[in-house]
Length: 400
Ligand code: TRP
Ligand code: SF4
Image 1 (cartoon, helix red, strand yellow):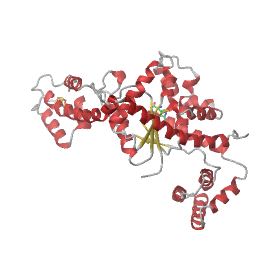
Image 2 (image 1 turned 180 degrees about the horizontal axis):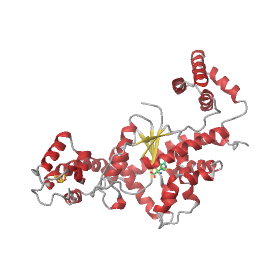
Image 3 (image 1 turned 60 degrees about the vertical axis):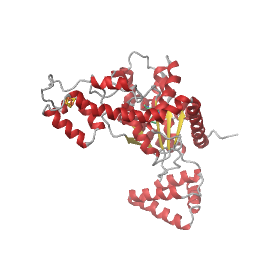
Image 4 (image 1 turned 90 degrees about the horizontal axis):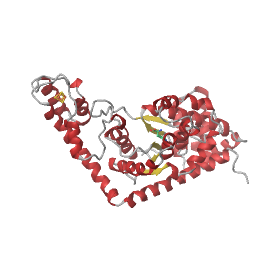
């Protein structure tokens, strides 16, 4: 188990589909056994684009959380919460907004892209411009090391890193920093202190990156340090001020090309999606009517899997032997398309059976779900309050 925290969020879009599962959730499930993980519903982010239809949010939130649990997110391992129930996110967003240059926000590629794409909505709002900053607050609040996201979100994580750097630069230079840092070094104990000094010198004088890594590991393992001293020592190691907000890294979800029923990327808006907990009969119908290689007009015409969207599904769901059977059978016209689709149907139905079983307790007793989320909000808030204490102090707001 690594100690580096993982944070990720999703806007509440309602019931999730197989693209969400293979593209994101499967990855979250894997991460939760390796890292402390926090996953949250970004309901405020939904309002940045859908402020005129707020009634959809509530419903979508719970449907989505049920799908997270259906996918195998384990509330014993991961903290699940709702953004708006940890109001510290709003406070951090506000405080960060004080030092965020407008140009940085205007330059985030999603800003203009989304405005053009969602041209039916008026997105010339303050809230929409601030979308990436709200996301930065979500991430920096938990001092996350890793943010599992798809490619489209990488600029937002990059932006978050810049915000952290700017914040630390502006507010990490407390008076008497050097003295306080040296005092903190002593608290490491003589053996560790000596090692720390060596690594600091090796990094700062020779640019030795491994020494920097080793120094950070040493600090990760030093347990008797206060939060303030820890931040000083991280900064002192690198030659900067206190590192109050940690720079996160995007953890790119390997682009699982989950095709929809038309071979294009699966997406609700394309109408080619299969929901995670879709009715089996509807799944059978959707796959059976899927288009195949257009060259196979008659059953006796040979086909080419590379030109067939069903083949894309075999790549997600079938083992080597089945794929071989498809390739040979399709090219020699020895199997029919319906026959070829059957293993895919079976695999999807089996996968969904597990989803349904895991979801059932929460459908039977919604209070179970409410309790998990209430508990998650409380855990998230504890961390958030700690961070906010430091942020307020750094920004001169802890006066009496
Ligand atoms: N912007 C993300 C998306 O559209 C959702 C999100 C909000 C997020 N806050 C986050 C993702 C923090 C990761 C971390 O998918
Ligand atoms: Fe597609 Fe399979 Fe039909 Fe070949 S046999 S065209 S791979 S569905």
